[in-house]
Amino acid sequence: MSALASPSVLLVDDARDMLELLRRSMKVMGLTPFTANNVVDAIEVLENGPVDLVITDLNMPGVGGIQLVRYMGEHFPHIPVLVITGYPKLEDAVQVMKLGAVEYLVKPFTQEELRDAVERVLNELVGKEEQAAPAVEQRDSFHGIIGRSPAMQEVYRIIERCGNNRATVLVTGESGTGKEMVARAIHYNSAHAAAPFIAVNCGAIPDQLLESELFGHVKGAFTGATTSRVGFFQAADGGTLFLDEIGNASPAVQAKMLRAIQDKEITMLGGTKSQRVEVRLISAANNDLSAMIRQGTFREDLYYRLNLINIHIPPLRERPDDIPLLVEHFNARYSKEQGRRPLRIPQRIMELLSTYPWPGNVRELENLVHRLVILKDVAVEMDDLPRYMKMEAPRSSGPAELLSLAALEKEHILRVMEATGQNKTKAAEILGMDRKTLRERLKALG
Image (cartoon, rainbow, N blue to C red; front, side, top):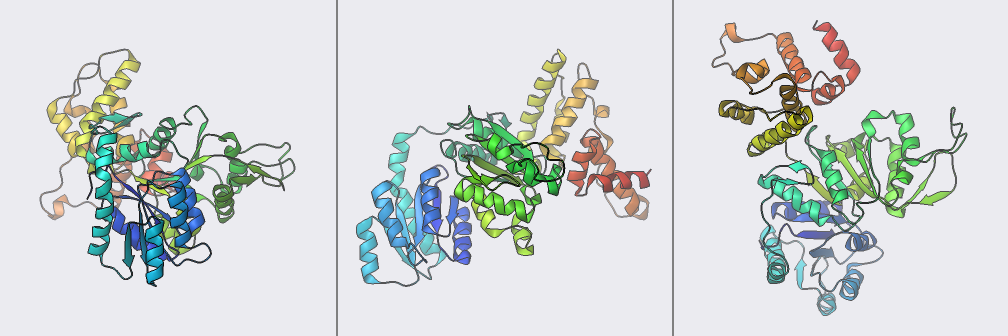
């Protein structure tokens, strides 16, 4: 592949299956794919997102691929175009090449043919890219995010590419990986850093209130609405709105959200007049939105709108080399708050922390270090770590070493509770249950 740093590719095709196939192929090649199933959406991506290459179908309903190639030749002549089509015509091939397309593929094509075509296009851009930008150095942190692993370097690169546009971003990853920190980094690394950044946890707001909180309501819209009130979309106008746990949004909220993205307009609950808003929308999910689409609980058209740019944060267990760096960071931060020198952490303890799987991810690690800083004065000893961190896996499956299912459940719940500093809300999130269920389970386990 080319020497370009994480090149971005806009894929345009009205066939969902082909669009998904192309998206997966680009990911395998190490590229950053954006998707659009019509030319109008594709033009919006071009005007708002960083694009290095466009791959477009020709035969699409309404405005076709030839018109897109012509538009790009007039407005984005520096972006190369690779045309694909299942209905090859000599006159079409000649026309799009005259309009500026640099490659032409006929469906069905093999993975190797697609890769070769993409590589030919991108390799022509390498020289210009290398002359325009110095080599990228490895970074230990970026806008408060800590990590030097290759996975985190990729996260930093994508955040930088999002800097001067308003493209929607979907941040995915397990609970506790730092999705909100990524959203804040995108905002404060952008040209709109001085505008508002508003974070909303959709999972913490009851379904019946979420629509009102997001879009506002007029007086008398519902019982108790004694005055009109603006929502988060209006409050974030000009800036960034971060919606965590987006999968909890109801169908009604999803429909209004789609309109807000497409038309840049919202209507307050109980109102009839629409209001224009200019908001960069970043959403996050720790559940599988693709599975929710198959189940009919999340809109497919909204998913493609939200997932224009995807940033996946790997769990902490997949980047163990970052753990010592994170421990040092939190140790220095919380020791400074306590007005004392950082704790001394022996190598054997650091090695244990680096091999622990961290089910609560960075949040769990931060809570542990914070607690140690409060409780210790000079150095951390092995006895200061939670018991479950020091437990070794049983070396055999003899009856004497086996635990009952209830005992295993109790051990795991207590482990998560301790890791989250006895925060039932966070523990319930990690355990995959609601807070009420966790409370009842704790009571039953004594």
